[in-house]
Amino acid sequence: MADPLSIAASVAGLVSLADLIVVRLIKYGRAAKNAGSESRRLADEVNLLGGTLSSLSTLADALKDDAFDNKFRMHHIEACNDTLVEIQEALKKYNSDITTKKKAMWPFTVRRVEELIKDLTRHKGTIALALSANSMEAMVQLLADVQAHQAEITAAIKDTTKITSRIHENMERRKVLDYYLEYNPQSNYDMSLHLRHSGTGRWLTRLPEFQHWLTTPNSLLWLKGIPGAGKTVLAGVVIEEALKKSTVTTPSAFFFCDYKNEKTHSIETILRVLRYQLAIQKEEAYTKLEQHYQAHHSSGLPKTPSVPSLSSLLQEMVRLFSHVFLTVDGIDECGTRADEVLETLTAIMETTDNISMALLGRDEDNIRDCLEDVCVPVEIATHKEDISEYVRAQLGDRI
Image (cartoon, rainbow, N blue to C red):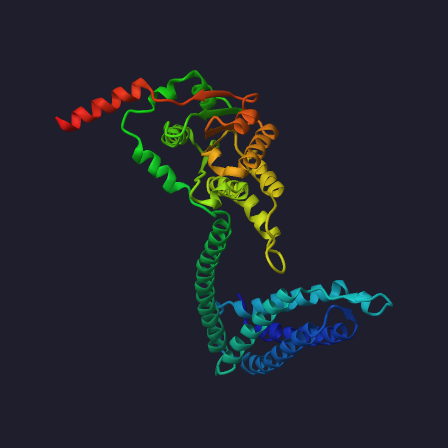
């Protein structure tokens, strides 16, 4: 609580404090390193506030004999005092340097100076309004009312700022993610599910080799077959089973190479898309992706990420999980770049121990040479169980 005498004394004390700060700010403007124009701007605002406080001090002194209800608090005077004391303490910390040969350091950042100037301007406006009072109680009431109103405005601004920040963050996140999603394999996966007849492909999921791949990290599965054997359809089976196993700590990512789309033949595109899928499944993985993005967009024109940097980051992201399923279909459809794709993917397998990777492609010499010593291949051919399921489905439809 405050009485008329203590209010008048408090305001008078603020006038003296403001005058002291102005003098110190002027000294800093001449002697402090990196002060620039910031010290002058801050000094001008404190000086204007000091003049307004001086007028308020005169009014408070004249009204101090008025009857006064001591239930009021001088919230705004206290807030004004807090701002001035913060400036004083910061200047006092480095004040001794000004009188020595050592170059004094300016204690405020540009951002903090802007915030202080806004605070000082707000205090000045409120005090100017209180000068219209014709009694001590009216003066305090005006200050209290403005303080409450400003609190409401500040709360509303904070809420708006949070919403704006969230929108900005979402836009920034979308920009980062879109940079890595050069090709969306979801349509390929949807097509593989559409082409698959109900009940077919179950034989694959019951194979010991497949069950080992599904349950054991650091395992490589190669599904091979002649053109038209149904590798892409079975890729959908593999991805579907992996997705059933997916959890927060066990993500699944996939890619389809398509001979009709040259972009899908690039190991850079494959690595980008696999990383994108991991990033959207864990915040720490997204952070890694964002750091990589910033490193290549920090200044000037954006730099194209190299294959080693893409590969290295994928390994870092993989290590954030306990078990990761990666499925890549159509290795053979990468043409002349198939060797590079195979070498990069198998190298990632060698440097991590928590990936279950499934590769699907024709049994061609270069693919066989790369994979036959590191995995047990599974031959894909027309399976009698699939034929039985297909005939049964057709008969059911016809009946």
